[in-house]
Amino acid sequence: MRKQRAVKMSDIAERASVSQSTVSRALRNDPTISSQTRRRVQRIAAEQGYRPNPLVATLMAQLRSDRVEEGSAAIAFVTSRPISEEIATLRGYYQGAAERARLLGYSPVEFCLNAEGMTDQRLDRILRARAISGVLLMPRSENDKASLELDWDRYALSTIGFSREQPKVHRASVNHYADMELVMRKLRDQIEVRRVGLALPRSLSERIRHIWLAAFLACQATDPCLTPDVPICLFPDGSAKEIKAWLLTHQPDILITCHNEARRALAELETKIPLVHLDCGTQKDSPPGIRQNWEMVGAAAIDQIVGQIHRNERGLPSHPQTTSIASDWIEGSSDRREALSS
Image (tube, rainbow, N blue to C red; front, side, top):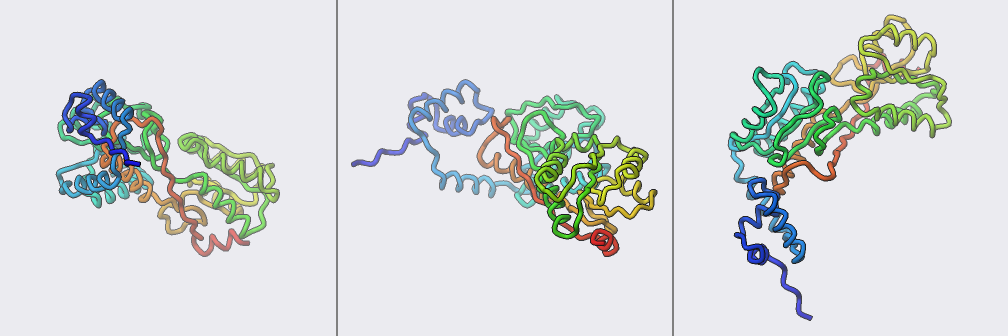
């Protein structure tokens, strides 16, 4: 039986009455080709059973990467404020993303949305004028507007975390659910504890879609050693008074938190309740807990963008993907380890 000849781009070009280069760009969703032509070419390709050669696709991605020289291609890092003014977490994301971008041959270029005279329209014009096709949307500040209005069809996109709900793009994030499971597993394995307290800033819990909260409740519901009689404390930012009242009322065996406000409340009460932190950061005098891999999260977001560029994918994805990065457990300083194990 004769093997059927593979469909080539030249076959599609002949049937669609366009050039082979137009077919190539249409199949890559190149925004310089009209949407009508792209849809027609893609429909003909599907009807003829066209399948790209994966070896050729890999070679072309490598050739495109080799052509990228320092300074000749850039990825836009869209921030709410100058990154130098942001908290350590966001600076870590930025650093990891910038290092990965440079490693892959791209220059990271920061664009601050709150810079004087900056609007969505102006940002779009600048990106177009500088031929920047990759855009990393850094986490937004609480006072920022919920979404941006750019010509999304022109860009390969990703964001970090969950603060930017719109537009729907690929994202990289800390694996908050797995982090809480790790904490609960460590508590179960290291010490006998039944009444675990969780205190989180309400605004932060909302910002991460209550994922820590969901994992905590799931662990409580499925572990017979844990009792659910300590209510969760979701406190307003800066409300040490509310945390102290909650601690005095419920007296948990151990406190899980991610906020220094809770640490201060414990210190002011001079209580012996051990503390586990969900985001130890780079603190030297840290309690036991989770050290999030901020730089790896930033790098993962860049990998998503560069992958889209190599595959010539642009625009908002129909099914956005999330890359979750695992964190590490740290034992904390010696005195704090002793408090946890006592």
